[in-house]
Length: 228
Length: 253
Image 1 (cartoon, chains in turn green, orange):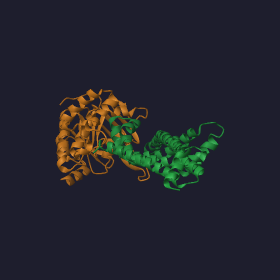
Image 2 (cartoon, each protein chain N blue to C red; image 1 turned 30 degrees about the vertical axis):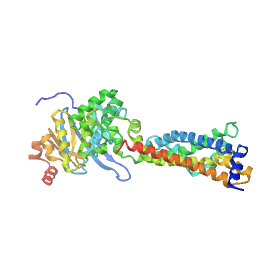
Image 3 (tube, rainbow over the protein chains, first blue to last red; image 1 turned 180 degrees about the vertical axis):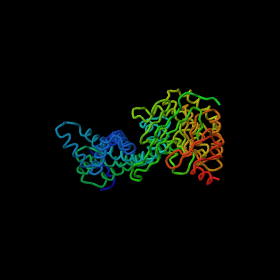
Image 4 (tube, chains in turn orange, blue; image 1 turned 90 degrees about the vertical axis):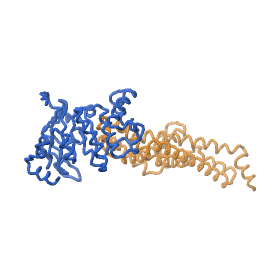
């Protein structure tokens, strides 16, 4: 079979490219929503953890946050996805994509939390003291002085987390979610040719990873220019 | 000299501080300190390293939590757990050895963020106040700069201006020139001298003895967890009473 025939068979015939396209749409959607959920929840967890480390307050919330982060980071993503789908939402009829949002978002939050916490802890104690000495409360100091600097420091790590998450969503097929990987696999099962559809999916992932990478680098540069 | 009969601005009563952590067990740093500062005082605290000078200063605005005792600031015991310390800190400016400017904010924003966020000033009002202070520390041309573009001496003058921008009733200086290159010490001391001349109440921890003698109206000698001697500059240097102080002054010369 020539390359041309191969491409025709795998992508054009019966509109098979649609498997990839709608799969890609889901993959990106899951990634973006999970990133947003992850960042929001991750911030909250990081705030609780670092407040406890800095001031000794929030004992119980810190215990819960610590447990949460340990469990999420200590178990496989696929298993977490299966548990959310087959255990937590077992008796509820809920769209699979929502399940994916929640599972990947909850997972990402644990990693984001640790990244941001590391960023907060890396800021010099003098910055906290300067804020306090002017009369800012702990939370205000965090908001106006610590987090802006912490986030700037950990931006590469956060960007990396987003890239990992994009690739991680490829396990969504385990709950029969039609993502990019599964789309390619469906084509493979129909055409009995694995090479072209799988490599195509890989190329698409790589393309978006490179775009994310570029965006993060650009953001980093913009933030740096405000701080010589 | 005018004599004021009003109560002191800061009154410290039976202040104790001990560190109790993994590194230091029951390490007594401050032991029964009793002292008061009046409005307009320019009080310098000197003494050997490890005497508790910085710890004492940091207890005054509770950056360091005292173990027991009372600190009355404008009549309120600010060591009381129910006191909103953030409000009182607005009235107590502090200048640090390491400057601690906010590196992600411009010089101007370093000054204005406090008045805007905490005192409800508008952007324009705050900038007007800030520019006056920048002029006073002779750095009005650096308003749009970022802290990392400044020299150490400039950073410290900005830090002083930032504290002044909150219009505090007292300024606490924690070894403000110790981290500076020698040639930059003068410009910072100059700003502090002018501040003292303007009758700002100042409590200064320093090793700059000559400067202390010149500017202070009171000098306190701290050693071994307590204030061992207090006097006016003249008598402090010429007629020291305490043996520890005599030894300390001899080493200084």
